Length: 298
Image (tube, rainbow, N blue to C red):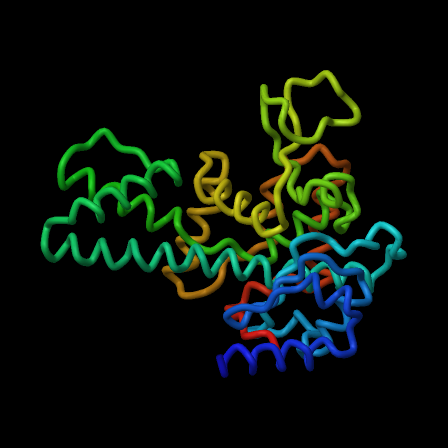
């Protein structure tokens, strides 16, 4: 009871300067502040209260502020450098959250691999977990028995790994015109993900009779999570995983801009290569790849 009272006092004091309406649209749990709905001024104020102003520091530590959607007035905010930097600050904690989840999965797999190498066996639940991750990350082998298990571990150690934050942020910015696209605002869709031969999703405006729809997500985190899984599993991104694996062996972060430049076929936007180069360079996004961490929100 005492803990609940302290939490209530904390929440009231934290949001005393934010409108009561905004207060009802936020949830704080386990050091993370989830913003269910807010306008741009409200989210900027929350950033300021958490001393979250700069994202260009190497080995930066960023507050666990997770926005479910783009700000409610985002479409009306003037497009300029300040708006773009707010977009980056919205995206970065979400990307780091997804990478934390992937790191936890990887740790479980590493521990299981160590156990298997030592004991030459897995429990039924452990073997089931391994097979589940193999299906999820599209790891495949025709081998049987111990050779199969070792092959799946070997593939998954390359596939189950963090995505460079700069890559996820820059491509989202380019594909959605800094979060102002119809898909970003109405469907939380940041990467033009498509669903084929299914009526669910958002109808493409330029071809309403198309056999595909753009996938809609409940929140921004779900979209980023799906994108990370695609990059970690689909055969088209094998080059990304190989480069990342080499970087891990060298104990340095992968070079996000170089990887993004190879993703030109992902988008039919004109001059996407130039947009990638400009976005990485002008906003110093590569610095977000240098071992960033999350810290509890106030």
